[in-house]
Length: 140
Image (tube, rainbow, N blue to C red; front, top):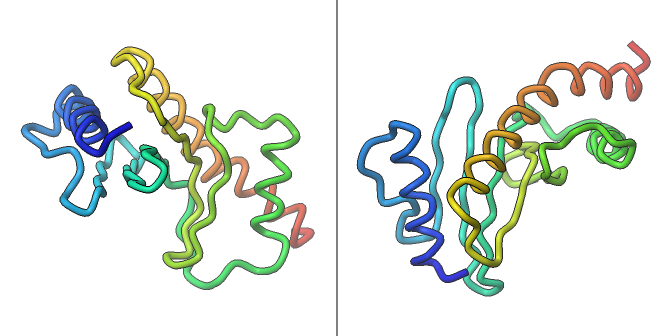
């Protein structure tokens, strides 16, 4: 997917969600929005021609303790609904996301459905799954 196609897709999506006129992605290929209680981020990777769409699960105040990120990854392998995304920890901002990638242009309806599922799952992961992982990792 080209950056221009990704930019148009994200701009269209944001406009359908009431964000008003939006470029979708900035010149560096980044964009984001808060919808309801969910935070969505978009990044176009030029080298792989991929649009990465990420829903924030949790932003850690410090580097996560050993076993925490693995605990989230284990949840995904055990079948916990990740909204069609994968567990994605970004160490540079200490944030945990559920992320999906697109290399080809999806239909508008499919993209809307995918983003709704991703946001819904991220909110569940930020509460119920977070508590479950913490209990398992820390024995609380």
